[in-house]
Length: 265
Image (cartoon, rainbow, N blue to C red; front, side, top):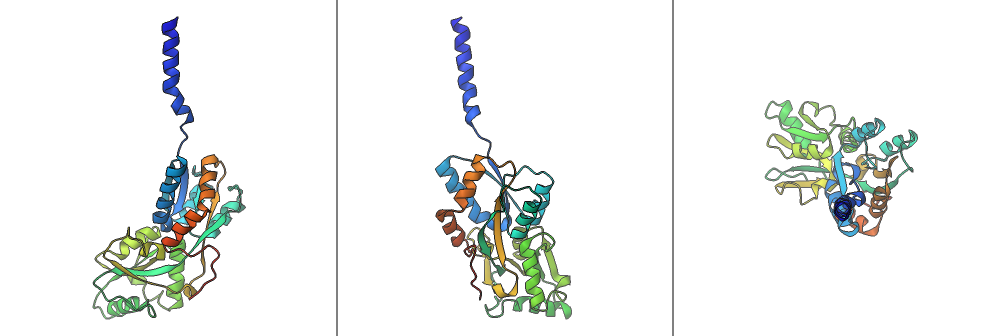
């Protein structure tokens, strides 16, 4: 009898930690917030002991996946329109909150002539001219405007400058803005229009250079996050943490403007 009870106690002791061990909370996040969010999540995990499993990609693709039942608990979008669409479908617990305002930058490999801040698209103009003269074919990278908010903004900038049609033979499209940044720094590219938050990050290629793009040249990039149906207590805690002062300071360090900033260039 004693032996049987001892075995039962040992089994319970082995099994008990698994009962209290929560599954990591599942987050779908825009690729432009990757570096900032990894830093925030690391601090949250250290302070709260809650594991965060993050998947990065384009906001438009995540909206579609969530609508199709992807098991995420928190959606951190680069564009509030995708959050609003999910809310309208009844797939969120609230209407979300703005957490940052983004902007664009021209990024390129160092060693090439860097455009002046007053004429940040001069490199694209030069690449178009060289192509039209059959002198060179240097690629121009941007995220996919079909589902990536920073791709939409890049197209708006190029249309504003009258370059969208002319640069079509040179464009190379990234599935998301992080991939566009990789393409922009490749050997056969002149550069690309990507998120400013990626351009300023020390995690990006150290051989890169950039100039910011005027916010006046594209629609505001208000970034919004939202709790999704089925979100647990861990997701709610992280959602609240992302709205705190420490997270806001990290977003600021990574080149984001405050969420309701009206500042323009």
